[in-house]
Image (cartoon, rainbow, N blue to C red; front, side):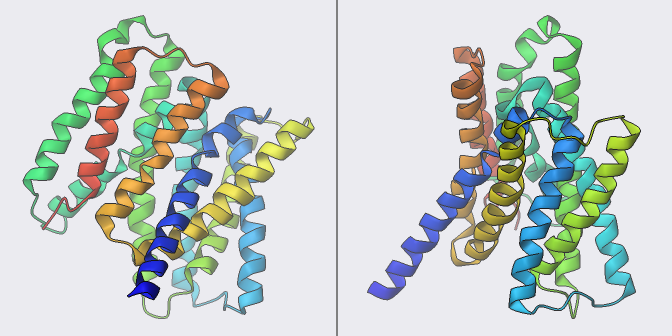
Length: 295
């Protein structure tokens, strides 16, 4: 019993640590003096290199056929669109709200489960939807007319982030569930490099410079790629199966919560009491939406 309890506590500690690490993702993007799409290029490149080294050390195989590879390319494109929208959203409305909006992907995933997989909704989820809308209204809706164009674009990009992230999650889940699938590390490695290529193309189309101009940007991009993209996600991926889904969902809410806190502490984001209340309500809704929402 003591051994089992110790292992559970270790898993909880690791998941909390992973959630804390990944909460710094939007902070690193904001601190890097490069274009938002270029930040994604280096994030995926540096993270992919670390993951590739780990996969090589583990002697994992890197090829399972042409069709899985093409599917991986599609996932890379989707993730490139997701990161492009999210990183630009960070620059428009800040690390906190952009991360909060991205986490609304749980409602899209549930909608897919209901409409396509014919899953049944629980009362818990039905309560979560209007709760989430109430949170968004407190944050955005009550003074929407006062926001400038960039802020409104940032909100739209946040919604696009949630949609694309949900599609990415579904596609990755399908890829990983195939017979003879590659290991999660290898899949994530290949996706990282493919996403790098697509985002580099997007960057060229937007005329963003590939030059990393200063040491702050180097440190931010290396931290983004290695700490957040590689280390944090490896910790979370290895820990999730060892913890109840409801508890894991609650712990992972540390990401948007802390991202909101970092936005206030590091970037002096002006925040009203109603916005804080709205953020807390939205976080509660996300938790309800991600915890046992279908039967």
